[in-house]
Length: 95
Image 1 (cartoon, rainbow, N blue to C red):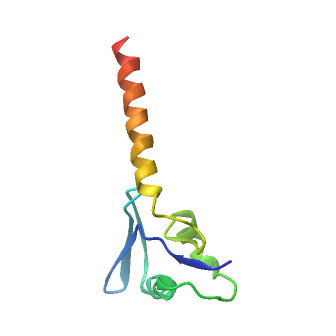
Image 2 (image 1 turned 90 degrees about the vertical axis):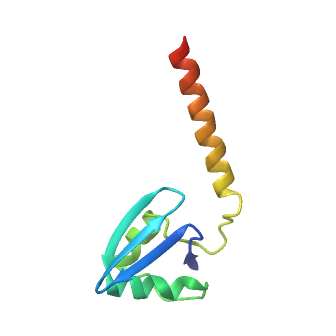
C-alpha cells in the first residue's frame, strides 16, 4: 500500500522530540526524532517496502493515509457532521 502524509497532519521537531497534530481530529501525537524523519519521507507518495512497526500508530492517528484517499471534502463533511450532532443535541435538551 502506498501511503502519504495526511493534509491535516502537522509536525514539529524540537531537539529529539517531535509533536504531531491532526487538525481534523484535533489530536496530538508525540514521538522521537527518528519517527519524525520517517514520517517526513512520506511527503510524496512512493512505493516503499514494508512499513516499520513503529509507524503503525501514525496510520491509526491518521497522520499517514493511503495515497488514493481523497481528503479534499473530508473537512467539510466533518463540519457538517458536527453541526448535525450539535443540532440534535440542542433539540433533545429543549424537549
